[in-house]
Length: 266
Figure 1 (cartoon, rainbow, N blue to C red):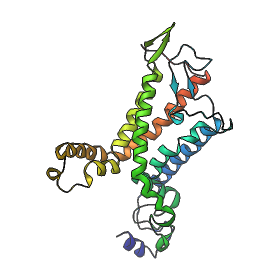
Figure 2: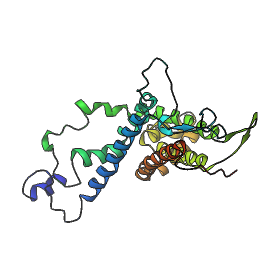
Figure 3: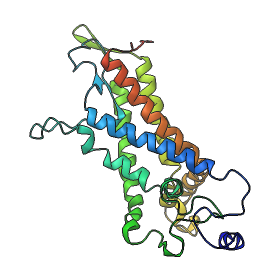
Figure 4: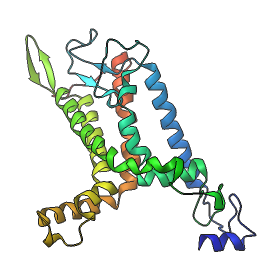
């Protein structure tokens, strides 16, 4: 259908179409948001400072431990040069999960590669486009990056627990600050993004033809049904979780730098 519309427009060619709507708005917004995220993440990785605070930091001895999700888990290797950011050791895993995500593939193929920039719109490669083969064959690793994403949910959840443990003289006590809630919200958004993943839906039941014919079929059916319900809003969770990761990092950065004050609630 797309090829026929392009042909009627006067032959295939970049951005040729008979569409009269503002089809270019979506790819443009996607390029701006994803481009901004990439630029910000690169800056924070190279900045390599003010990403944690709390009991282990000199300037915040009476604060619960807060760690930016971009640096969690914090891996310090004494034999590495000081200019190598700890984030470089771990970001390739959640980054790989997003890069190979089925939804993000469509988003950045349209926004950055123009293959195609929109439905029934002439693409950059045209008949030369080979799909996810050759150089893009690595996209098949998405199902394996899913396991990394699930592990990171556990790690980031532990960071929320640490954010609830406040120094109290020579002991410790439970406490909650705005920073705690920010980290908890980040985990919640990432969980919704991960649990709505197409690969997780396939893992729990997408490959089953008969749920009553396999072990734990009833449980797998319930998991598959739940994952399917979340999957309908996968695009929303993809963007919401991306923005939330940035906000959580900005919040920890501002608190660690002394520009903001973290309000303790409990």
